[in-house]
Image (cartoon, rainbow, N blue to C red):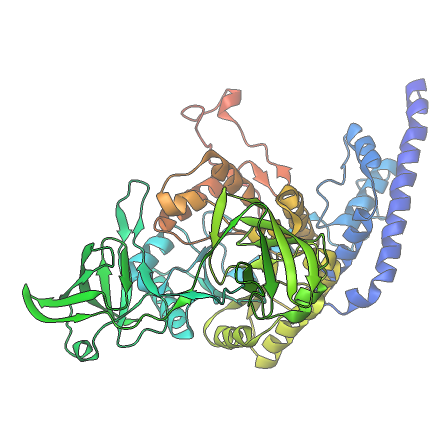
Length: 617
């Protein structure tokens, strides 16, 4: 043996011992978590075992060992999420000189192939058959029922949508059912398998403004970046208004109005509109207008048919509505159960959660309107929580009633399922394929819904755990072990609320870690919130959005929100995913032949050399 060989041997042995010690520490982690592993479903037992190994690995700093392994051309452990212990066994075998025909590599841990098989099997169980041209699924949020037409469904399915998400925080069961029937009906005609997920509203906290002002009906049209109408302002014609987008008209008109009639409306400002009467399968009698409409109680109405005036009247009573409050940096507001200020000059917000209000301590942040308003709690007393605005997205901002409020620094505990969640879950069990559990905080939230599904006897029904709070991150190991007690489970990185709770500066770090943990327990992950948002609303992407979409393909499913150009966004996302899959799988770079490197048979630098990436089907 040469001198150089003699000199390097002790270093190799030292590395082997380090790997061996690490393996023993992970085995100790398994002993500590044995009850959680044994509680998993038999088909998830190896995933629970690997999760314990990964937790043992990630509670230690192994960066020095990683660098030493990589310097010798060995696995640096940087891509071992799905097969941790098997990777360590192989490393020890190579370092001891017994690989590749080593019997010391145990077969009862998942290896790389088994880890990939389990992950893709779980993804198919939750989202359906794999798309024929990619392995990443696309989930799209349903629009309002008036927009959920056959044309909408055809364009969406044709663009590559695989899963429809319905947000049960909006709309009614009747409207959700109509949307599902349209989407599934067209998918069946087109011969495309699709799934439907109902997102539970969850215990999202919202503040209300008790002070009221005269009601005004404001119905907006939707337009593109050039100001062209993409969807008209649409309002339901009723005898008595009791909700949004409802125009009260004389009772005697309702029985006589026909499709094609015109209602001429004069706004309080004097501006005039011509509303076209139509019928909607879901809403009944509606009126549409190519411009946005304002109407107040008593606004003048004229009913015409074929250019002949049939009657004149007025808009009925539009209920008073909560007023908007204007906030600026440095101003104060009060959060209380009643929302009634002790001083008429004071801004007060109602939050019907007295126990939560009492739990907030001075110095803790208060976030309003999805992060557009940031305040700090200054005092908590009998009259409520006194807060001071510290930053806004604009110099001043008007806050509407019903906007969300979050206390990211406070330790709050709430029940996961309220009446609205129960109703949405009942609907989902009857009409959908899976349910999204919003604001998961502890393993009890998983159990609560999981047992309801099990009791209902819905074989194949899935659940997606939405990770969007600090509580979920704090209790992530127990949440994941609990999830492995049920079948057809996935995770969603709900980046919007998560960013508010942990801070935007930590969002990138958290979304990476959640991707890794999903791979460690072989559960599919949904990458959600504002993916190609500008495309969905204007038809044109931004550079940052394209990069975000390219990174999203490391998840098993990517979620798009709604918008007038949602089919365009869907088509662009599918194209980006197809191209990126030839370059990357999870954290692994895939080296297909590059035209930029020369010697390509492609047509130039943009040639995709459409080599399929090596993924299980």
